[in-house]
Amino acid sequence: MSDSALSPAETKILMAYILEKHYQLPRSALLSRDDLELNARALEEWKMLESKRIQGEPIAYLIGKRGFHNIELYVAPGVLIPRPETELLVEIGLHEIKRLNTPTKILDLGTGSGAIALAIAHEAPDAQLTATDQAMEALDIAKINAKLLNMKSRVQFFQGSWYEAIEADNSFDVILSNPPYITSQDHHLSQGDLRFEPISALTDHGNGLTCLENIISGAKYHLNTNGLLAVEHGFDQSEAVVALMKQADFQDIQTHLDLGGHYRVVSGRK
Ligand code: GLN
Image 1 (cartoon, rainbow, N blue to C red):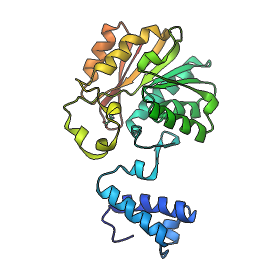
Image 2 (image 1 turned 30 degrees about the vertical axis):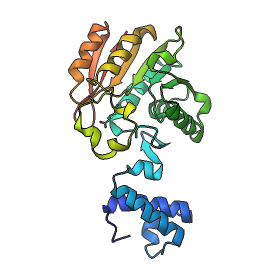
Image 3 (image 1 turned 30 degrees about the horizontal axis):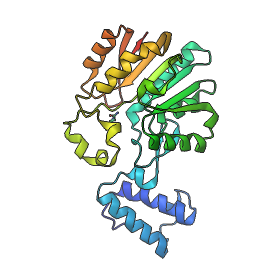
Image 4 (image 1 turned 60 degrees about the vertical axis):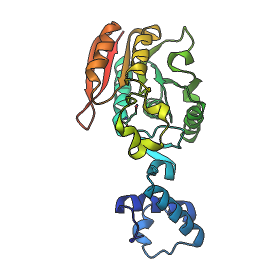
């Protein structure tokens, strides 16, 4: 373990996964069983994971999970790996649930692993969640997560592109979305974890604002009066997204900072 080519932190994460899978040992065994010699099968898997990681595969895909807000999600290459900054949308949703103080209807557009919808369902037992995705592969993973978290009855899933997944007369108190907003030219797409993530979850293959515009302009048809829309965007897109909200006649438009100090979310009311 000590002579791995990986950083100590990543070595620990992968080794904890191996110990749990092959020896049913908890994470704490990393300390208490320092002398443990891996058996042949465990060693083989360790080498495979180590080499995949050296080739750049995201840790979350290798161990099949990622923590998000107060839940743990199953993740696989068909979905974006949930990011900590997206927890902002969860907090905005939860704040609105508290403010309304009635069973709140919430829509998560482009749910991917189910992160936003399930994190909210986990905290708010009376909230009614709907989650959509264009990719069947993503919806399958989101449904697995709903099942693993015992929240299958809490979330309705629909397949389709943005509002096409929703019945015309279905409206919500809150719409949340973390759409693909990276521009097609952005060099980050060919770096780090992003190389391995579904391209359709990352970029609109255009200027980065196509999906945001679609979501913002269509929201009025699916929001209740005074309903709240909040969307995540790129670190340099705040002004453009505020302008889109103004154009679509939203009220009470607010910008929200993520923990990294970047404007990351814009919200507004119908
Ligand atoms: N936040 C992700 C990133 O910067 C991008 C995800 C998205 O486009 N919604 O890697």
